[in-house]
Length: 406
Ligand code: ASP
Ligand code: MG
Image (tube, rainbow, N blue to C red; front, side, top):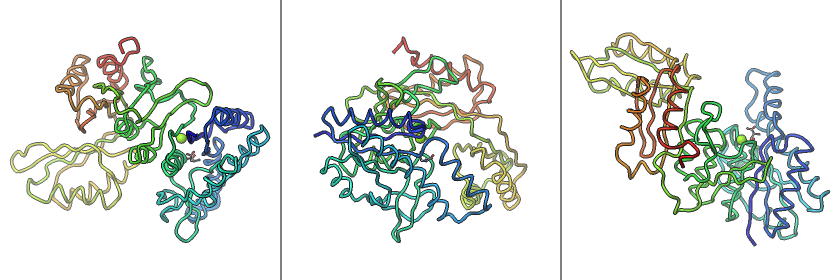
């Protein structure tokens, strides 16, 4: 019998009415001749509510206790859904991370799954009882409850699917699927039918929040196709991975990341070890750097520009200023009036001149480019925030992503 893992996000189980609707969908999937394993998130808003309770009692609540606290959200929704399923004639039972035996490392609030014992889920299925797994949680080597980071139920679901060798992992959410770009930025945006794992990894790291990035990594590693779809309709969503014969389009999506800050250090002495020192200092402070540009040396001095995320604004200013003094560099400046626009598509590998076309499209709209980075299947440009939306619209249309041109 085909095995389907169905994950329901917070809004999909946000009320008893929604939970009843989910129960009907799960039952219909089972009645159609599938084995089903369900994975649920906490009811919408619940994780934030619990985090706020802990934070009210302490500015630095013990991390172990915070994980125990927030993991309860998923325990509630898994039990409620099991009640609704059983009531609707499809016997079900909730399983916490402990009961499912999802083993993780011991890093509270961002634990990684090491191993899943499939026995509890398998024996439930064998008895005709649908397992409803509480997402987002596991246990470490000494039995502490751990959680997997925000959005972690996606990763639980794909990891459960991988451990059981499921045919597909369906992720039910409150949007129709993955979009060509943010519909809030460009009204031409539309749902993508299929996307490769690596394209999805790029889109997720550029801020497409529809899947936790680690769930995509797990799906890719174990070859589990992920179907992202709406729990509010029966429409097909977006299939991530799956069919290898997927035609490779040059540009699958356009992303806008407003989270970038540009930092420039002027007049660095041009000798070995200087740049290493700056980035070591940033790394020691857990500041991750995205784009990097070093200008050619002039009179023994170079300028260095790099980007970091908004949350690291203050830390970057402090660290860069200190490093600049240490190495005898000039002035440090930070600028958060920049955004990053990116095009992503696996077809870039086999097509020349994609970057050139992107730069030309931006130039034709008189949009200046501040910095550029690329991967094999992505080109990103830093532009002034005033031009972000316009850049997205131009690239979306220019690369033929407008609905009728596909
Ligand atoms: N409830 C957790 C969160 O809000 C995990 C999840 O929903 O995936 O982040
Ligand atoms: Mg989510």
